[in-house]
Image (tube, helix red, strand yellow):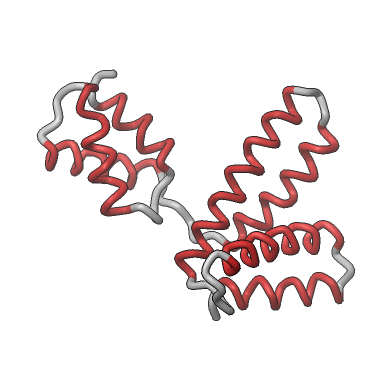
Length: 149
């Protein structure tokens, strides 16, 4: 079943179970999917486009959690965390640190990079090969460390 269909089914189930937190999270996801569908007047979304939308929503939630925590609003941070949990439950798992490090080392070798100035070239190779499989922030941190930055 596609991610799009999974979200619709889970939304129905959450509404029947009267799970307010999960329903709120899934409605937010569905709204993002609808906006994405309106961009090209399609009736459904491919898993690739769903994942892109979900990653964007996850990033927004993480930023909101940081802001609410800094503003001493744990109640709002908790609501955002609950929505983030729903979003992350639908996303494919990203590579762990060891796997990401191996990919970064391969990209450094392929690019022939030796200085931090070549970070962009290395990250470009990694993202081209493993775009949907890794956390870009983690990859950048590892690459910076390995290149001596």
